[in-house]
Length: 374
Image 1 (tube, rainbow, N blue to C red):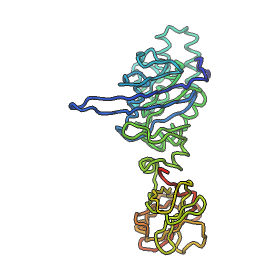
Image 2 (cartoon, rainbow, N blue to C red; image 1 turned 30 degrees about the vertical axis):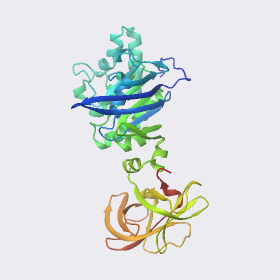
Image 3 (cartoon, helix red, strand yellow; image 1 turned 180 degrees about the horizontal axis):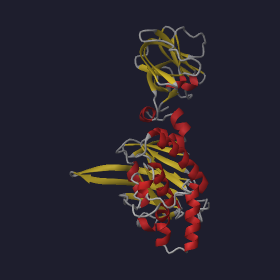
Image 4 (cartoon, rainbow, N blue to C red; image 1 turned 60 degrees about the vertical axis):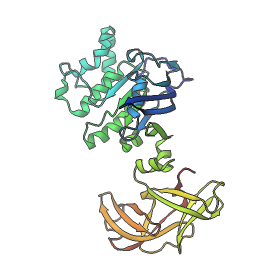
């Protein structure tokens, strides 16, 4: 399918320049979105991720034109649309509620926008049929929304938005009403559909798994600002702030002081044989305080002390063991102070590596200690 839109590859699909949004609440100014500069490429699957109240939906609504920025400029395909009404912006929006017409069939819902635009009937049939095939609705054209599952209704809403061939599709937590298994299936389907139609998708969600699964890039938002912008791998493996480290998946956070530096590796010491090795820049020196993030799946747990000299090593006592089927999660009270969580994949044995009260050793490679804010 082609989008039918002449896009200039020299311009971003969406660009925000100094955009901010303030509200007046009980006589006080609330900054819903702080000054934001953001560029979203043509054909990109881009996610705005963050907790409730972080400003992600307000940002999307300013892109769509439903909210007017207090300041700054919104560009679509290089055109200033800051003061342009929503119906004159070449974007469509899909909501969690779907908002399908209950008295129309699936096909009629999809074709509705084209009929309003007085598109030729043969062209409507061709385009509606084409997009319904892409979203896997072939054979369901005559069904009413009440005769369809939640996932099928979601596909109708997507098809209705895509059939108009917008420059960008904005999706505001569209999978939130689906059960877990169907939501996971639709994540894969959404990415496939986006690749097939080639339209820029901007996706708002508070679900880290959704964002990591589908996105080319993610903007993690907190308190009206972007804390980190990057690919899913960059954000997960190298969180820029304590908030990102804690919000994206599970992360162990350790504080320490640099005891020595050897090349590009700093050593944080916690007692006899207890150390954390951290790759750092040349600017790091002895005596510097560091905050380190370590993901639970990067840590090895054993009842014997590791012999490798080039590993981070901490000891501790197991306080909790939780079996999750594919993995077992261990919580260990460590010599470094905080409890650490370890994910051990049950690939070779269903037996626990240790039980509550057991003394264990934790080890991991230096590249898995990521210094935050360095």
